[in-house]
Structures are given as structure tokens and as C-alpha cells.
Length: 251
Ligand SMILES: [Zn+2]
Image 1 (cartoon, rainbow, N blue to C red):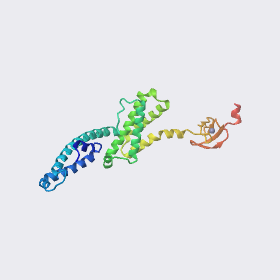
Image 2 (image 1 turned 120 degrees about the vertical axis):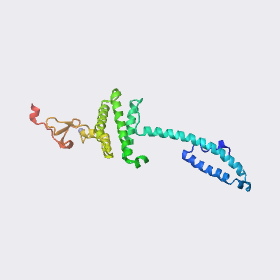
Image 3 (image 1 turned 135 degrees about the horizontal axis):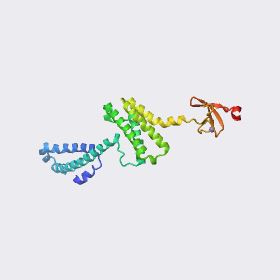
Image 4 (image 1 turned 30 degrees about the vertical axis):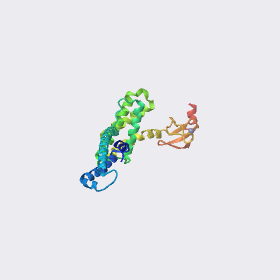
């Protein structure tokens, strides 16, 4: 048998749960001896059963103090995890860190909407709903912080987008009743940029932004290609001729 210090070294990197299993196993051996100490004199093995018993008690002492240590770090890690998983304070964070926080929270919310939820959320849909609301509020407050305190560090595009996104959450918050409402707000948030892009009509030839011809509004113009396109209710239609007539050119 090995010494208690050598014994415990083998267990130092094991999980709390694994240590509990070992404690159970060790305890069985200890109790076997305690329940039938008389058997020990009948069997000749080396080391003898009473030496094994004393060793196991010393192993147990080491094991229990390791379990106590593991338990403590485990509970502090879990409480940290619980506090920050849905709501993270941005106090002391700089502009880039808050932007990262928003990305993290948006991904976390996406995961939850995609069904990647923990056991508590599985067994209690109200808990899932509460967590999702908290994440959205965290995102809102982060955008709010960025557009107030860090206004100078944002590009004008960012300032517009972030303000829009924080307004979406603010406006929708009072309507959150079910997970469907959460999903709707989330969709509005993530598609906000795409909608902006789709509103920009692009030249089918060179993909540059088209200009609206103010004379009719129904014709789009690419200054790069010098081509005209029909405006079909906000989408780019077939190529057409200049909306200007000779008369326009004259005056
Ligand atoms: Zn073009």
C-alpha cells in the first residue's frame, strides 16, 4: 500500500463526483473491517487487514479534506456561473468589451431559442422565459450604455444601428407574454441590419447602389454602368431607357 500523500495525489485532479465515488468505495472497505475484525486474524495476507484498515482511514482523512476543497471551489464557480449566465454587469467595461458582451448575449439567446436549454429551463418554462427576458434587458442596457457613455467611440453607422436596436427592445418589452414574443423581438434585432441592406437597391450588373431618378421615381440609375432599371415596388426590375425625354433635356 502507498502512503496517504501519494494516494491523494492520484485524486487531486478528479471531479467532485468522482471523489464521492471513491469515498463510497473506501468507506465500504473500512466498514467491512469494522464489522468483522475477527476475520482478520484468520487470513494471512500482506499487508495484514488491520494495517490496510488503518491505511484506509488515513486515505479517508485525506480524501475528505480534498472533497471539502473541491466542494468549495465548485459552489463558488457555480454561483458565479449562475449570476453571469443570463445577466452580466458591464460596469467597468470599455466600448469593445460591451460590444463583445452584446454578441455573447445575442448568441446565448439564440441558443435558448434553438432549444439549447439547461435542466432548470427544461423542467420550468417560466424560468426559461424569465432568463430570455433578462438576456434581452441585458442587451438593451448594453446598447443604451454604448450610445450614451461611448457615443464618441462609435461610428455614425453603429450609433444609428445600436439606437435602433435598443429602441426595438424598449418598445417590445411591455408586450412580452410568451416565448413567441421573445422570438419576435429577437428576429427584429438580428434582421435589423439585413432589412437595411435589402432596402438598398443594387445594380444587377456591378452591384453598386442604384440612384432613384427623381423625375419619375419609377426608374433607378447606375452611374457606373450608365444603365436604367425599372423600380418594381422596391425591387430592381428589367433594364429600361432613360426616363428623360428630349423635352427634359431641352429645359
Ligand atoms: Zn452598375
